[in-house]
Amino acid sequence: TLNLFKTNINLLLSIINSILDFQQIQANKLHLCIQQVNLEEIFQTVRGLFEFQCTQKSLTINIEISDKFSKEIKTDKERLSQVIINLCANALKFTSKGGIKIFAKPDESDSGRIRIGVSDSGIGIILYGT
Image 1 (cartoon, rainbow, N blue to C red):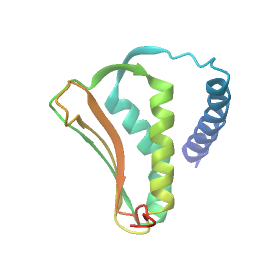
Image 2 (image 1 turned 135 degrees about the vertical axis):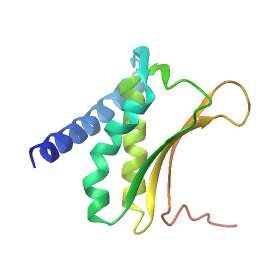
Image 3 (image 1 turned 90 degrees about the vertical axis):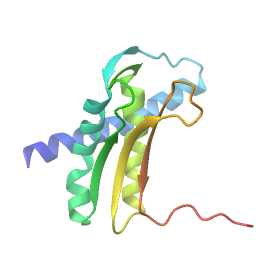
């Protein structure tokens, strides 16, 4: 239970930091800290934040990283983590069965970029007027 407590505190701090970052973006004062990070470590940390909640809902939460690029990338670790956490939180909220996947794969444009995302088996987004 102590680990769960620490995990939830970290999630709450991440939410607070997201709010503060939004205020910095509005004031054009957000600074990125680009550094070499391990993508798998970031994904594992995020998965750890949501494992208990997924288990409570009988959902799986998996990580899928393509082997077509290095897991060491240059990015702002905190910002990337915040985005993935927000996507996972939304996936958890709208998924009642099945699972959530955090993934990284080569971008389809063949530009050398990496596509990082979260997919789920939830209800999806309903398009109005189509």
